[in-house]
Length: 124
Length: 107
Image (tube, rainbow over all chains, first blue to last red; front, side, top):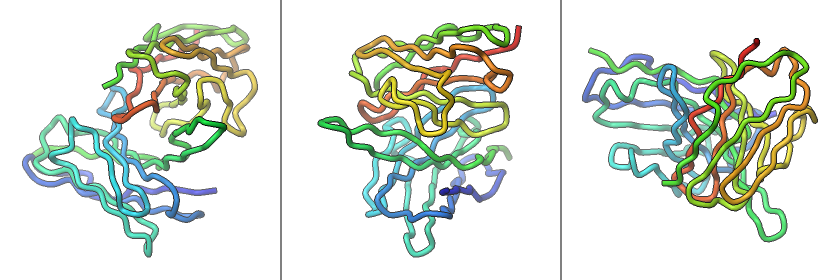
C-alpha cells in the first residue's frame, strides 16, 4: 500500500518561494505520474501539475510561470516550488499519485493515492 | 480549460436514502470522468474512474454513469460514513479540472 507524505514550511512570506516535498513509501516512484493539487480553505480542488518519474512535467497554465517540479528517484521523493507567492496561494497542498490505466483503446487517468495534505499560509 | 459544474452544491438526506449528484462537462469529455469523496480535514478518496468503474474496495452502493457532457454519481442507500463532499474530475485533457463539489449532509 503506497503512502505519500508532504513536508515543508507551513508559513511563507509574500513574494517568497513556497517549497514542499512529498515522500513516497511502500512503492516505487517509477512509472507513475506524481501530482500536486491544492485546496484553498473552504474551497474546491485545483490541479497544479505533475512530474513523471523520468522528469517530464506538465503544469497548469494558470500557475505555469511560477511553478517548478522535480523528482529524486533515489530518495523516492518529488518536490514543488511556487515562486512569488501571495495570499491567494494559501491552501492545503496535497501530493497525489496519478495512475494511467489502459483498457482497450482508452487510457484512463486518475489520482488513486493522496498524501494527508499540508496547510501553507502566505502571510508576513 | 474544461469546465466542470456539479449540482446541487449541497444536499440533505437521511440514512437509507438514494441520492444522485450530477456533474456536467463543457465541452464533451467522453467517459474521462472520475469521482472522489472528501471528509472534513482529510484528503480526497478515489471512488470511480471512466465514469462508471468502481475503484477496488469501494462499496457497491456507489455507482456512476454518463458520457459526453452529463454524468451522475448515485449512492443507492446512504450510510452514516457517506456524509461528505463529493467531487467530479475530468481526465480528458490537461489542465485536469474538478467540479466545485457537492456537500452531502445529514437531514
